Length: 148
Image 1 (cartoon, rainbow, N blue to C red):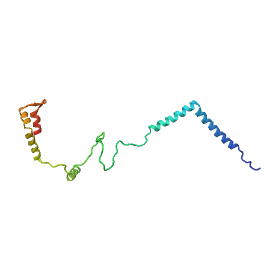
Image 2 (image 1 turned 135 degrees about the vertical axis):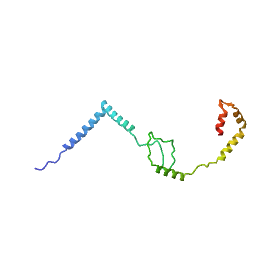
Image 3 (image 1 turned 180 degrees about the vertical axis):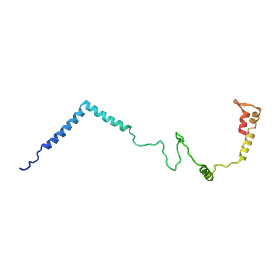
Image 4 (image 1 turned 30 degrees about the vertical axis):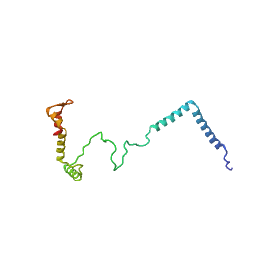
């Protein structure tokens, strides 16, 4: 006997399973309980995605070779850096060799400015020598701090 030609029955079963799946989904989404469960599920996923970090962001924007734009950045802990005396001496010597001073000290400028101050404020200095008080301050002691 020859094998029978396939009938439409298996196709029909598949269609029935698709139809029953559609009915099941329709029943889930059309009933109040199923609708609430779906809403809770979608809401939970939305909350998780909202609070999930999107990308790593730094408080500071900086580039290598550019000056630091922000305040002092200090670690919350201390750690020692151990160096031998030879290493310290070598680093200090190399810094001194490459250091460009911002100013040069001229001792005569200081004495000239003190003499100019004394000349311009002669009357105040005489009152200070007498021990006069200005605004509750001992003027003699205050001016002596500035002049010495």
